[in-house]
Figure 1 (tube, rainbow, N blue to C red):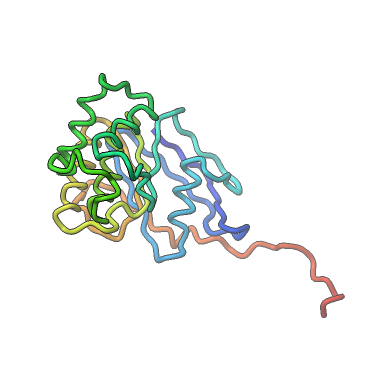
Figure 2: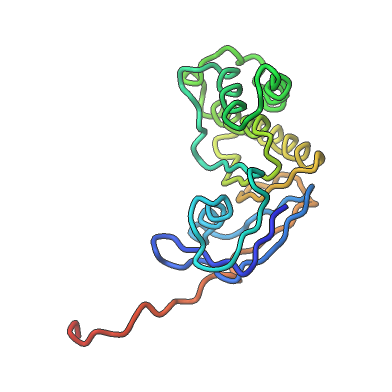
Amino acid sequence: MLKVQNLAVARGGVALLEGVSFALMPGAALVLRGPNGAGKTTLLRTLAGLQPPLEGEVVVEGESLTYAAHADGLKAMLTVTENLAFWARVHGVAVPGGAGAVQAALEAMNLGSLRERRAADLSAGQKRRLGLARLMVTGRRLWLLDEPTVSLDAASVGLFAAMLRLHLAGGGAAVLATHIDLGLPEAGVLELGPYRAKPRQTGAFDEAFA
């Protein structure tokens, strides 16, 4: 579902990681590990096609992935249900034909009682749950997730973990950066430390500045 070969990524023109290679099969999850600043977000953004790699290759089926970062991507004046229906349409899931997907997303993240509430009136944790529920209406098989459990309490983390397991059981896959143990012993772990980029030569020294 995803193949990464000898990938190097940079932030602000500075190389962070190099030589990253892995393959992800349907039903598999890969957890990115490393301290803040190690390049987890930059790697995810590169995998999502939001920025070009310095070198290497990312091979992924067209229109097969969705990326969820720190922003919840909600329309404040739309209700919970309307937000999910909106994102279903954006990703080509027909509504009302996609109503089943919307209902499944509401149930997965325990949003049924909030279905008619505007996103603007939700708490931070409720907004995060709705933002994650969006994943279920995209129809995309590969989820790229950057710290998905931010603002979630323990119960909501459990809901998300269950939703992720359901996605994997259905043949989906996920790459995620998280410091939380989601109770997925089958998930692989990619420690980014060994891929830290070596300083690159930027040019010859200019004696005029000596």
